[in-house]
Length: 472
Ligand SMILES: Cc1cc2nc3c(=O)[nH]c(=O)nc-3n(C[C@H](O)[C@H](O)[C@H](O)COP(=O)(O)OP(=O)(O)OC[C@H]3O[C@@H](n4cnc5c(N)ncnc54)[C@H](O)[C@@H]3O)c2cc1C
Ligand SMILES: NC(=O)c1ccc[n+]([C@@H]2O[C@H](COP(=O)([O-])OP(=O)(O)OC[C@H]3O[C@@H](n4cnc5c(N)ncnc54)[C@H](O)[C@@H]3O)[C@@H](O)[C@H]2O)c1
Image (tube, rainbow, N blue to C red; front, side, top):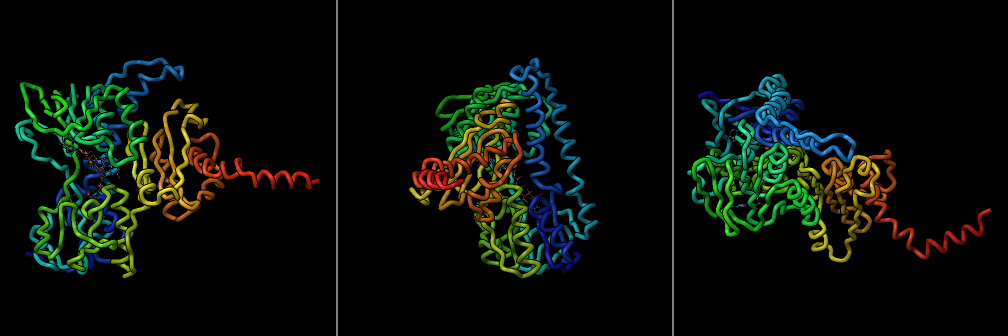
């Protein structure tokens, strides 16, 4: 057995672990990174990257058959599903070198390609190496949750870990779960020419503003996706080449099944109890500083830290941890300024509080301003007019923004910046933006906040009247 001592030992080489490793080693710390699967983790190999690449193929297919309103003859796109998967894997391969063992070893990180597990409060074992570290970071991410639905174990089903390897085009894809994974995959597969049924136990896209989520769901339904809500999958059976999902709202039969019912944190193989690390089904129990409440040497980052599960959150955690682990500075995570986006067409994005959350927290003090995309000239030019932005404002400052529409994932950035920096609505209203851009919806939403104050204000009218009389 080999023994190594280091400053920082990171378990998990995904979005969180890699960001911490790269930052810490380049600032002079001795870093060991333990990765038991593929470098890059879920995001690169089974998550964000492959899903967005498949969505790009689907978008292209859709555009080819929906150009008449732009004067371009429509044609039935001939989709080669296997070639679309080649594209997906090519995109992964293009990005992979940035996350590779070679790059990290080149930066000075000692990478151990094994699974790690705690053998004491101060030691982790990975293969035949025991690592003693001053600080450990657990960044082991999450995997697909597969609930024990009766009959599931007797059929072939897919999860996000193998759907991107499937090369035969599903005739009819049944998706259990209408969260972001289920809904993104539903629209992509429909546009690639599959029949698609989504079976959702509660409300699809239930973590987003319901008014905006409805616009996405209506669009998917118009495109032919069958979305059944309030229908828990209770039993699964198969006959020949078909799979049937049984629910209280009826039975739904298809050729392929994708499970997208949520995530399970990867803590099983870590022996956290031996490390004296408290945990529950959401991950490690940590404070706002992301430090374990029971073993002060240990920190968590990313999906396993018990909060929002996004790549940019894992990256943000890296910054919080580097500040405290390398410089000993007090450093806490915030969650009120974290945006997210679901990459359907139209996209759906959120930062801060939704309308319902803001009203529950602040009552009548909250003002909600709205602006619809069909008033935006660029949206009209591109015929992307389906969309709405809502901004929740408290005492002149945004505390939440919800956007559905073309490029909502890009547009939300301005509100994420405003909330992160406690900016006022006037900062957005005073910004000059190039015309014609979709991002002008942001400025118009800020304008909608000030218009009644300026245009429906008798004092303003009186002052202007007086000034006009006295001006030469
Ligand atoms: C289909 C899908 C689409 C998604 N799309 C988006 C998106 O568009 N935008 C977004 O922000 N987020 C998206 N996400 C979420 C995003 O992928 C995760 O939030 C992100 O990958 C979390 O990073 P992480 O570092 O916590 O974990 P990961 O990136 O999963 O990395 C964890 C790593 O730890 C390794 N590991 C686990 N246990 C051990 C062990 N004992 N020893 C050693 N190594 C171990 C794993 O092999 C893995 O490589 C998506 C997720 C899915 C499933
Ligand atoms: N664009 C993005 O940023 C993006 C995309 C995909 C995933 N993600 C991340 O991955 C996480 C997981 O996504 P997800 O969609 O798997 O999970 P989720 O928890 O958001 O949604 C799962 C859905 O499955 C439903 N469900 C659970 N059991 C069911 C059953 N037996 N029958 C029918 N429905 C059932 C739930 O009601 C829920 O709506 C997201 O929360 C997000 O953090 C992000």
